[in-house]
Length: 258
Image (cartoon, rainbow, N blue to C red; front, side, top):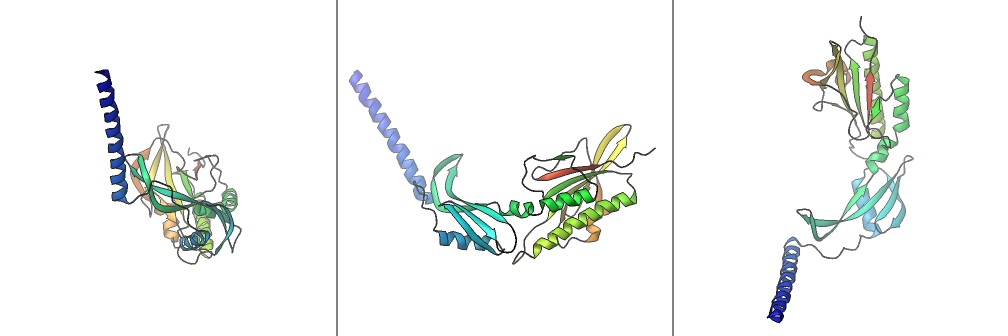
């Protein structure tokens, strides 16, 4: 009797193994995926693909290994890394093999913004701005700002904010010369008016050309940059935080009203 049960148990395990194998076979057959990791594309294919992706005059500096490369610009002091990642078929959080394709992950965008980091920090200093907080102490670049200013600022102080935004626009215009086509190098600015009522501070959200923020690029007009033209919304915040990624918070207090 025990021998018969053991035999039935082994048969049950074998059936389950066969069922799992059949499921995997069916899934891989339907989706066309592969159980083994595909070979990385050849260097020539990688270089051609990257030239299609990046519309700047670039060159291959080093092939670190089959999946990691270093490229550099031919027109400025800028390098970026490329990582090839074998794509997988994922169903409900589980991988069922490889698609046979590779995704081309790179940090080109971050390096473009990092190219201007010192310039941006110098502009902040020239306008008398300091970072009240930033999204990450180790962030590699700066691409967004949250600026909060008391709503009793003098005209000259508001003009100083506008001039800073114009300087950011000039950087975006400068970057355009390095690209062979359109490239979205812009800065995202969230502007808040600070109101104090009954000793309580509130941050009033404004709306610009990009929902609750302003995107500053080469074609942004002076009218769009003027914070006095931003639409004041009914949305008020009890506190304010810096942008989520690679961003800085600038809080301008000005002189308290009597």
